[in-house]
Image (cartoon, rainbow, N blue to C red; front, side):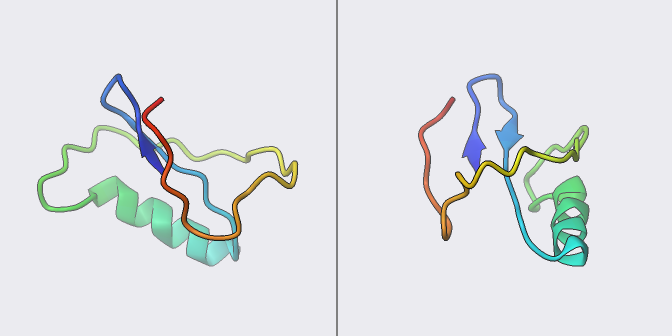
Length: 60
């Protein structure tokens, strides 16, 4: 997960389909101070590059 310079937030999630959908549902509301205008969900290429756990990444 990371913040992008244009103000958007990018996340990649993997796991049980129901859990990923639950995360997407939460993202549609966001935390209390969030201003969510849209959430895009799609399939990412599974190239084996997913980190094994949460990873902090620089702003893109």
